[in-house]
Length: 357
Image (tube, rainbow, N blue to C red; front, side, top):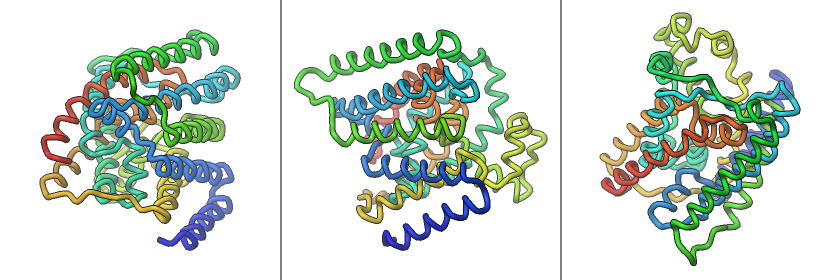
């Protein structure tokens, strides 16, 4: 699509939101546009950064992510401490989290994208990610349908570091932990490897700023997975295949309300839509290169996308909702998610190599 008609379409959608939904949702759409443009423009791939670290001992992507987490935490935690109406991305440490994060980390390497990666690569026109997107949404919905059974296997209450230790304690502990990870990565890759790349650095700075805007405007951290599950839930319900009243997750007051409303009123959905639009804007200037896949690769990739969606709900988010927003807003579950997802990534990379993705 040419940039001029795309810009006109995005502007018309923004005006529609202002006129018929709310100014807040319209501004969140703009935040989503920025997130998508930054992710796609910088090719800021959480999945790619982990893969480059393991396979090439290239730490630049992971150091970009560490910078992103540090900046976002430095911005978000003081806001959370000062304004109790803002909410952290809290998830309960649980069996569900352990299993979901591990499986997610495995599948994201096969599918070549996490939640945000699937969105922005679909916006860039990458065929596999375009095919994965609806399957991810369906998987996320099914995960939400089953989440109560997974939580029954064992859980503890969510732990918020800002509430437990105060802003100063939570931020200091987070920055020290991120620094420790950086030192460990530096020692593992060995001397002579560059740690920083301009693309990853500017991507981290822009994403941290936009994520903070999202927190302030929406009252909650940036997320991706919930919007996917909501889209699928509304579709399945419209076909008469799902009774939300009989489900533990979707019968909760907030979820039931969103299920009955337009997706344009959901803050996660509107930033997801904006993210797609921002990636489309980048692709209009520089389309993504996509490797042709054979039938086996397509089947495995699509299956991985579906399972990735399911596991993301069990893990209370993806690299954005669980890792980025969890850690940057002081949720213990974000720190549990990372090592489990990284362990899954090590296996996922073997599968990826086995089928020559």
